[in-house]
View (cartoon, rainbow over the protein chains, first blue to last red):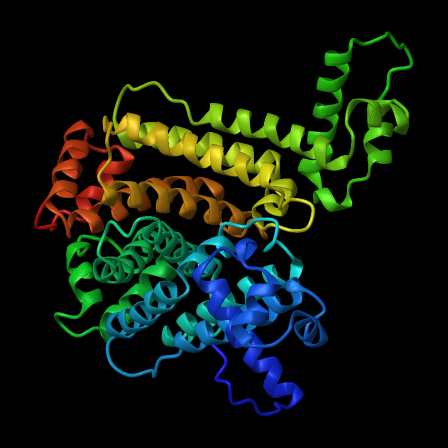
Length: 230
Length: 230
């Protein structure tokens, strides 16, 4: 990994380089299996020098996770233009890109375990979920979500997470299919909730009004057209 | 909690009593907030005697969690009779009973945290999920599930978990509504998957054939009747 030609890095530059090297390793294997020696070697520096920048593996892991979290939250951002289903599908594609790139590390993190159960890692996971939640509400043009909408959106986010985790375990279903399905699942969960509550029915109506014929949400919605309140 | 009248308990009887007392306390508050002193006091014994039966709080917590896991897995069992939707609805009612009884402890466990991230607790959570998965497959009369069915069932289990967790956080939606919705959600996720795959379509057809008009699954299925492969 080192080039032979060395130049002195500044403290912050070296920290950022170490975080990048660590994230790469933590993504490809379970964090439990990655040693500080390996990170030092991949970064082309000595083990003591790693400890000079990070007091231990957990703090380096948390820094790497923070960078990955920022990256993932950034992928949720989508311009508020065009049909909602198409927007959500583009986000799903970027979400699965991320999951694909960080597979083993993502699995280890989300399944929990001794190295990844700190309050910092839990807070980072929650911050990503919150970023997804806020993005979806903004696309739905809702500022103060009713309890039923919050429930649909947050539980769908957990459905997307578990779908990605199950996909990683063997990749036995094409990811493109799952990306589209999750968009349909969102519409379906919204429709089920709408069938129990008028306010949710009105919200579904507004979502439908923004869809164009043939879009991914439209295809699902056409199938649940029998809803009494839609 | 003690009666004044004491009799000597056998070792196993005392262990079981301590587990019961601990489960009660761990259910009502976050496990982090429950002390061994409190458990000893509630059981009417001394703190050293608690340590005689359990080496520490974690081992007592794990024993309590094992009892709760067995209890929950037992509630998934349902005779293979009548429409599938009605069976699933009865299981959902018992699931929410459990969640209701163990609210704070269930939240703390499922949200992770320093006291609950051991490999034993993770294994117990997985065993309950696996029990739910096996039960559902048996009701669907499927012995070797295709990858898409495994994905629908396992991701729905995670949807049910997150729905229960969000419900616990404020209880702003009536639980009876969510119990029925989760049955509809299951049908909806199955239907979305069926619209992508013929084998899943055939399976959905078999599920439909077992439904009686007016049952909870039937109501949802009627709304997605436009499915091309159903």
